Length: 73
Figure (cartoon, rainbow, N blue to C red):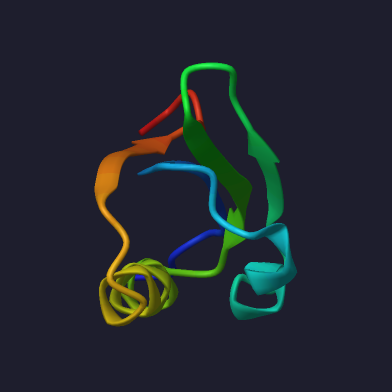
């Protein structure tokens, strides 16, 4: 089975220092007025998604939501 790249939006509690964006290569990041940081970007597969989630865990950040933005998912 061939997997295709999918676009994800990952919300993290708190305003994460955007200098950490190097940890989240190929993602855009922004702060929300609600006090969250939103990372958005394409990932090649589930393994890459789990890698990003492990980085969030390793940094001690609180994960709020992971959303696949592709319409067929």
